[in-house]
Every structure is written in C-alpha cells, then in structure tokens.
Length: 71
Image (cartoon, rainbow, N blue to C red; front, side, top):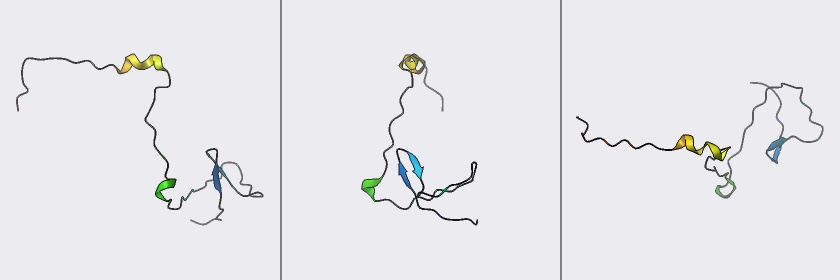
C-alpha cells in the first residue's frame, strides 16, 4: 500500500485534515487510530427505538406447557 500520510483530528464526529490538504472526491483513505488512554476511551450507548410507537413489536409472549422437553 503506497500513499501519503496526514495527521488529522476528529471534531464534531468528522475527521478534519490540516488546512491546505485537499483530496479528490471518492479518494480511498485509511484511518489509523493510535492507542488511547483508558480515560479517553469512547462509551457504547444502549440501543434505543427510533420511534417509541414500535415498542409493541418487541413484546414477549410466554407459552406455558405441561410437558418437559425430552433429552
């Protein structure tokens, strides 16, 4: 893999390259993130429904049976 290396920063969720760096549209790029200290690590949030009215689609149905499963 050949190419050039630029150092940038993430601002508001977007990668910002230094002033004067212009890449052509559809340029393939690779992002390498150096090791971060544990206090800088990002946090994964729990998933949420985009529309609360869809909660009924996730209701559990419990089916009670009298027989045990044969092993």
